[in-house]
Image (cartoon, rainbow, N blue to C red; front, side, top):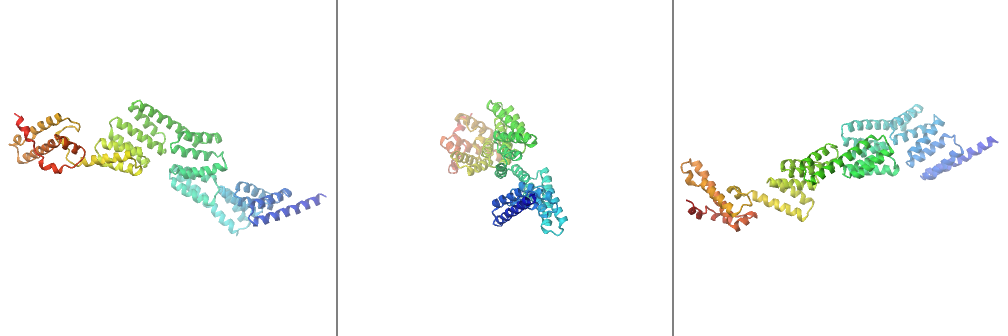
Length: 456
């Protein structure tokens, strides 16, 4: 009776298998899976049924489940060549190249001329080499090479989460945040508890200066994987960076600029890899430098910010203002042009026009410097300065000097006269201050004679 029952079960199982084969040929893998499962239920000790279902699961890209079925198949029949081959392919697709290599070696022991096993064995060896290269390049911080190696490895191990995560982490470290987030998000859609993917999502947010959100992902990653050291370190850095930056902002608002400079410097030392946050910190420190009357220091910090983020408008504006303050107008114009090309606002246009005007004015004689007065000097101050310098450079005072000295003093005396002619005339002074050319008036510019009669 038992014999008849087993015979009936075997026939039923074979029928299910045949139906499964028919659906497999039609590429209806879901139905094929269902019938192979029925065959296994009817006859659970048949290695080929597990092998068939494994093949179907592989076509459905369910490699972990396919791996389990392949392993069951070879446990039932150690000489089941297709079972070993499928197990190896599953291992390889999941990134377990060493295990895959052992499976393909087993196939080659059973059939040394098996060309598929030979090729797959070469593929497994290649993946191991890409892993080795990626590990070395990561230690060297050559993240572009790591991405290259992982792309090559994923061409042979398409569903390996480990390779995808390493690629995503390196993309984040290269500043390619959208690509990194896309890879991590794809993994999280399949496995929301993946601590590595949560870490990479947090890393992208952290590097984009979204520190609060980043901390949430790091905490979640540590909840899923308490020993995730990278998340622990990143979480600590993120919290320290935020605290130090906020402390610096607070003392800056209270006009304690020395303390602000120190705190921003300490914040910059926390994580050199955080490009966006560090760009902001450099710009903040540049603002402090300007407040401390250290324009060269401020320019250096703004330049550091721009090197980290060449789209950082605020850093260009701060540096341009510092250039204006020290009368390096060409550099200021260059920065304002960059700003205006990026953001064509009325304010930026006005700043550019002002810098261009100052540059134009700087290329003329500076009559204020000739007289030794400031640009806000009053009419009386201009007159006094003129009289003092006129006495100093008058030709009569240098009649006994060498011809060279006389010529130089005469030149200075003439320039001083031109300067006074312009600055003592309200209309000419206004035109001069506005940057207008005064060549038309140059023939009338000489030493104002009416002052001579007032001197003793």
